[in-house]
Image (cartoon, rainbow, N blue to C red; front, side, top):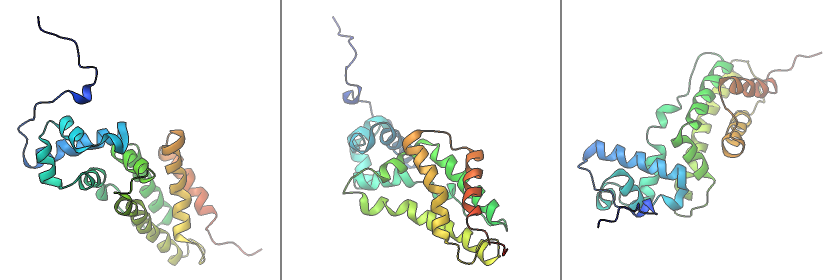
Length: 204
């Protein structure tokens, strides 16, 4: 009689490899990696687990990425550069609202949440390579503030990096800790709070 009892551990259940090649294979593997990173963290995102979830051979993953670290970094950062453009509307408030609304949208995706959570998760094999991801993009965002200073919208002594951190910090905190919404209205409130502290002071 055939045993039809389900495998109690789905992670060990083999998935027949699919005939995926090229970009189709890459996208399937990256999607599987993001899903595992989001649900199980770094510990669960092994090459074997990713290959099983994507329905490809483990050797195909190593052949394409070379190492687990390369796979994870590609999965987390693939396509994200286009998700955070630096606007130039001619006004610092509009620039910041557009940028941080895009960031809030990114943080509402599985890929963005996984990247943010893993940025604070300890793993010596990835620390030097994933750490700069957010800092590099926030440094680029500081250019919007600098333009506002040069146009006279903000005080000459305004610190671009500090202002960007004043908006991004609460966004990251909500995603990491409270899970509260980070929609457009919340973004606008954060931007206005930060800008109110950086605008030129009128002499009495």
